[in-house]
Every structure is written in structure tokens, then in C-alpha cells.
Length: 223
Image (cartoon, rainbow, N blue to C red; front, side, top):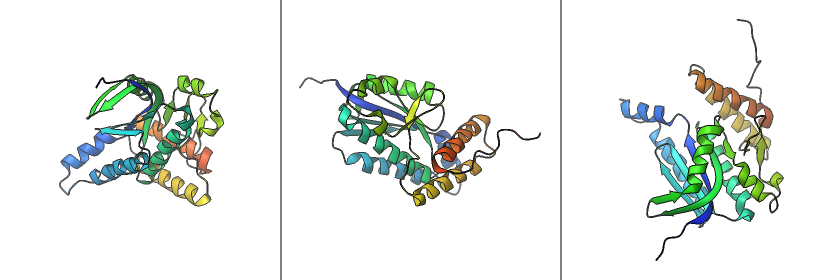
């Protein structure tokens, strides 16, 4: 049987702070703290994407690859599944960033060969920057004649990038729960380095915009 490359949607996602979590658990004398948390996150991803037999999921180290056969009519559900998983991560005190695009893709027997993965990784490593999953402009331009872009649950930021609006929820109870989880994340990182603080300030502004929280605070204060 000749192996074939076919077009897929591909998402490449990194769990933020993964290296520190691994270091903590490997050096802890009182047992692992994050192992079960991260394993449960993987199981939830399997449940969310396992509902679709055409979807693929591979996790290695701190990176996760979601893929699905290319069909623009299914793009909204693919992005919605990723958003659902992102919400579940936040509730467990975890954040991620990544990129979503499309391209030729092949995976079988734990072997992956994918232009889509390379392009999605490029988005994650060079553009995502904050706890967000950026969607490629090429994919949105290709989808626009077929899909109402307004139905894709995306936000476009001042830097021009579109990302999955994972804090979009339908009721006040969910808004309150997400805002509380984000506040705990921000408080927990109060003594973290500048790179982490930058990500948390972005998350606070996003939460204030989408959930009506008041986490960002004033931009300036007296020294």
C-alpha cells in the first residue's frame, strides 16, 4: 500500500511551564505534584477529540498535536474542540499557547510527517507569545468564501493576529469559575520572572475583556 500525504487542519500546542513542572516532580521528595494533573489533561484531550474518528492526537513532552482531515465545513468544530480543551486546562491551573494552520500531513504507527505541523510550530514559536492559540491568516483567507469567519469563535488582537477565543462562555456561572481560576494563576505567579509576568498581564487583560473581571489593574503606579 502506497503511503499518501493528505491535507489536514493541524494544531501545535505547548503547555506553558512544563519544564519547571517536570523538574519539580523529578526532584520532589514527597512525590509528584503535576504528573497526574498533566496526565488528566491528556485524557481530557483524548475524550474531546476522540468523539471524531477523523481527528488525530499526539502528545510528546510538553507538546500536543491535534489534526483533522481538511474540510472547511468542519473548521468551526475543530477550533471549538481546542477551545473546550483550553478551558479545561485553565480550571486545572494550566496554560498553553500554539498555532493552527493546514497542510499536507501523514501520521501512522507513531510516525508523523507533516508540513502542516512545521507551519503550526512556526506560528506557536514566533507569533503566539502569550497564552493563546493563533490561527494562520492563510487558513482564514482560504476559509472565508466557504465559512462565516464570525462563526469561528476568534478574537483579533491589536497586533493583527487572530486567536481562538477560549474564554467565551454562555453563562455567568462559567464566567465566574474561569475568572476565579485565572486569578489564582496570576496570584501564584506573583514572584515569577519577567517573561511569565508578561504572559499573566496579557491573560488578565483578556479576562477583563471577555469575563468582566478586574485583574489587570492600573498600568502605572508610584514607585
